[in-house]
Amino acid sequence: MATSPTTASVVGATSTAAGVAVTPSRLTLTVQGPIIAGSPAYFTLDSVAGTATTIIVAFGDGTSVALRNSDSTKVAHIYKLPGTYTVTVSVTDASGQTQSASFPVVVN
Image 1 (cartoon, rainbow, N blue to C red):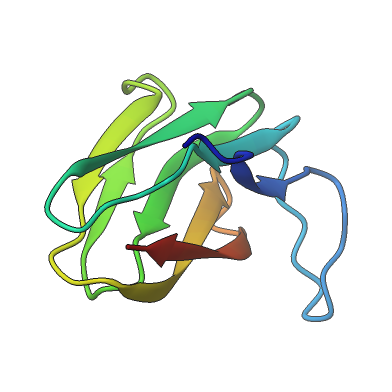
Image 2 (spheres, rainbow, N blue to C red; image 1 turned 45 degrees about the vertical axis):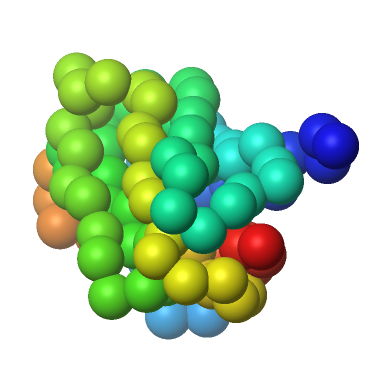
């Protein structure tokens, strides 16, 4: 049974409480469920643009992947155990400013 995609977005030129403004024009990380432990979950990164130099996707299980603007926009990850994980996408621009967004992922 397919479920709605889960998404986190980082939008450039917006200030966070810490005063960080990153200028990718827009970056969205999406995963389509259901996600099954032991099977690949595919995360799609869309609209990478602007001055983003590094994108880090932390999967919430202690593992992460670092991407550059020119890297593939589809990342596969296998969760070993069922549970709820917080996925965080962090974007760093050329001046070293970072902005992040998170969303929960349920693994069956």
